[in-house]
Length: 355
Ligand code: SOE
Image (cartoon, rainbow, N blue to C red; front, side, top):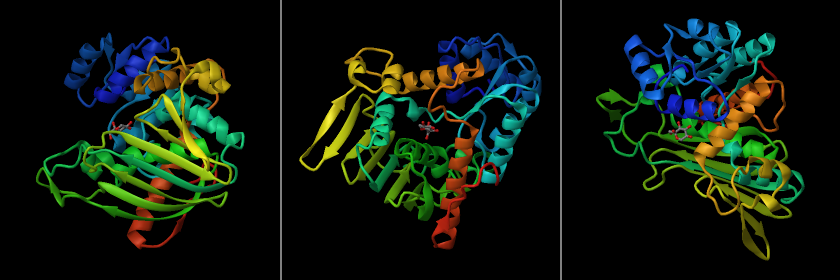
């Protein structure tokens, strides 16, 4: 583990559930590494990422955003497989370097876009691929939270030095675009955007990064849509929603109702309950408890870790978010910032691996 915060705890739990032994941890200082290692029951600490990577098979990078790229690269160069938190890097150029490095080293390199691992998300994806929405006409995505609403709310991500040039979009917009493109099997090709800051100053520091972003998108397949990302939406805790509507019907997944799938038809909408006996194979595979036994975020995280470790062992699980998907989200984040700064439509770069 690299890092000792909330995400390191979640990764350690998920890695253990996948059968891993969490053997060592490094953090920004020796004291914080020792504290986190004690709290997470990790037997050893390492002085830095290189030393850590030399003694393990898989490195989980859970450090602040601005150092993800350097830590992931150090781990790859030391020969380890890598799980790197999103945003994979704070620019598309850096993310592209990581994709190339992981390919050249032949290591497994994944990004925890864990919402892909809710069984009903897989069900939506399977139904869309089988033609349930027909030709996609509109997409609507929202990811709303409220933990940055108060002027007094502060976080390391507010500081671009630690969090990078984008805050809300890099943090949660990255999940939204990943989920949308994953379920749709389509990609955003151009977008226009505007961003907002709720407070000019937080904790005595001027705020340079966005609290909210509103984006208009067009997809390769010709659909149009909107994305709203905000961390200042009162009452919304982790409200990630994706709706895809087409000529034959519509689907909507809601992260806070992970055991349901909304299906829209002109004659009326229905809500499908998660029941592995009635789901597509991939949704049934990820449905690790029977119908009526609620599944959630930690189950999705565990499934992500299981599939990552299966890939390390040479299997090819479907839908595993790789570094190329982290690069994709970084490109979309770059495009949102550029569109907001210029006030114009911007194309989203699709070239493989290149910045
Ligand atoms: C905070 O915004 C956060 O924990 C994100 O960093 C996660 O990626 C998201 O899953 C939930 O919200």
